[in-house]
Length: 337
Image (cartoon, rainbow, N blue to C red; front, side):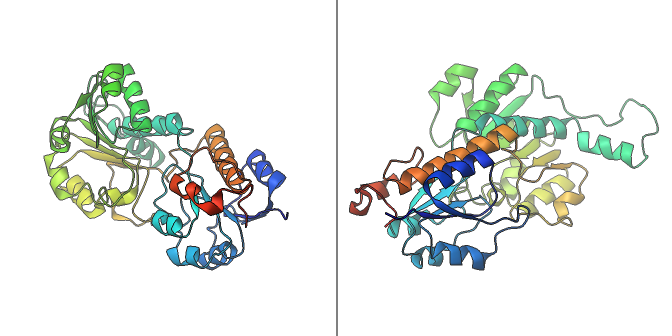
């Protein structure tokens, strides 16, 4: 039987690529800092059995319909809003993701952003670099205390739980809002469940960790920011479209909230002239929540293991639409077709 054909949309760490190459014939988009063009991605999808994608690859449902050999899309990310899962399921294409391996690293970044915004680290650096540091005075770059403050976590999944453990070390009061209550979280860190509105009213820091879904798109707008304290810091490490960015800008310039820290934007890469980036009370990073050497290797490895398992007749570790595996075409010894 011929080997499965696979396309990888970016260079990935060598150990992960070796997993693919042992079982499959691979083609890799070699330009690491350049997105794989849509026309290339569509063309490759039409000829391969497996696709390893990044969160930045936007998959069109029409491309799946035009890919008769495609069996699996392995996304190197926890989120999979870049993939039309319903269309994939309709065409018998398995989708996988990489949960669990990046929780602690992303929680580190989320907490770092919160600290940086609270203590005005970006403003401090710019003050030095631009030669505006003239000396010490009592109100110079005063910020907000993180220790003993109230943290409101919106989306208490694995990453939210990791953030809560860090907050406990800062003696923070921890509130959370989630689709379902988390008695385990309450028992582990003393977190208190709140409705979203109550969480916004009570929190000194609001951290967003929800997946992007039709229900969470635009979740934070003018109304939500109006409920927050004027001293509150808003932190988003989930997905950009969860936030109405125009409403966030207005809340920041009018003093409805004190500061924001953002790792994600509605359009990425974000434009350098984006209005939010002009504000001194915005701390921004370029979607690097999982960006440690060790974690990116674990993500790539899990994505490769998912893809190879699906194409060699084994159950992948982390399927998104496992119902596809129950179909007759997935019950044979191999899946490359």
